[in-house]
Amino acid sequence: MQCPYCNIAFHPQFKRKDSDYNPDTQIFNTVYTQYCPACDQFIVGVHQYVFSDISYVSPSNAEQLLTILKPMVN
Image 1 (tube, helix red, strand yellow):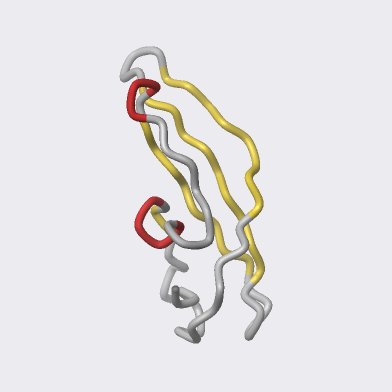
Image 2 (cartoon, one colour; image 1 turned 90 degrees about the vertical axis):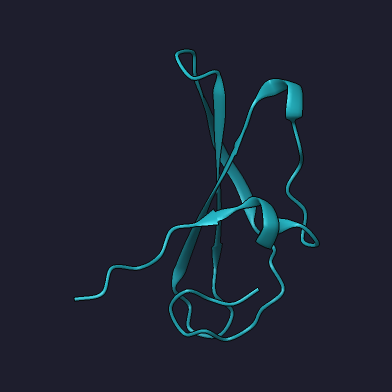
């Protein structure tokens, strides 16, 4: 996967943070974080899923399952 800041490829090793459930949409949101090993920027990804379709984020599927929050460009 590539860092959204420096575009250098790295092996994802995200740490799972908090999960939140929205009862109106019945969607779970779980936050994953990691520092880029090349530029040391903080990377945040969100995994959204419904309980009946639970999937776990691992290094091999992080790029497919996480929505990486992109840095704002000034």
